[in-house]
Image (cartoon, rainbow, N blue to C red; front, top):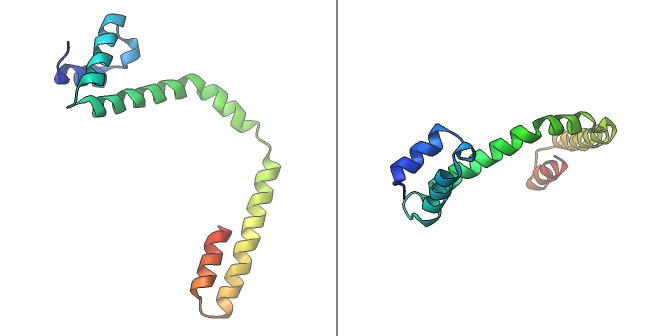
Length: 108
């Protein structure tokens, strides 16, 4: 079984998925059982998992974003701009009230 210091050092040095299976097993076991470093090192492992997942799917995510139709986004942006413009005209006409500010916040 590893000590807390050894587990933290191993996780900070490299991705735990690249470790040998036996070392990875004992590292995970320590993280699950340890009441002192378990939460922190579990978060480190989750962060490494998220980064690894993002790297694996980065090319796919970029292609999906590039293929998104721009029409619906522009319609929403235009509607939001018109709503904000209307509320700003109302605010210029008189002193802003709490209701006007809430309406402006909803329009955003």
